[in-house]
Amino acid sequence: MTAAGSIPTTSIHGTWVETVEVIDITDGTPWDWGSIVEATVYLRWPQSGAASIGYNEMALKYTQGQVVFPAPGILQWRAERDRMATMISGLYELLVILEDVDDVVPIVIGTVSIVQ
Image (cartoon, rainbow, N blue to C red):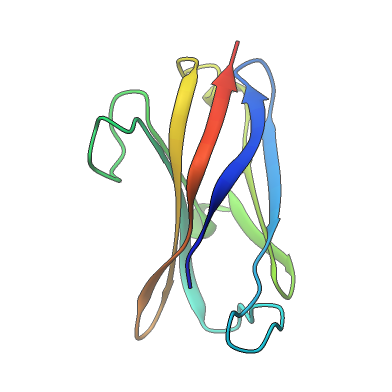
């Protein structure tokens, strides 16, 4: 399952909380999070070519409490103000990776603008 688009602009001066809805494209139902063991939200410079943590990049993880599933089909992440303050303003690529015991699935590929 992959979706493309942009996420609303956020700032380096506050906590960033974003909520997205994930729908199963085969039947239109909210995504079931029951088998997920890890979810990671990556921010990266488009020029970096890698989804790993690096200079001016960020990774938020389910296992570290930064990504949550408050309801079926709802994915939410949170980056605290002190972490946002380390980012440089710019347009970042956003990639959300879900992992269960059998598979690794990218669910969102898009962009987010981070401003001062």
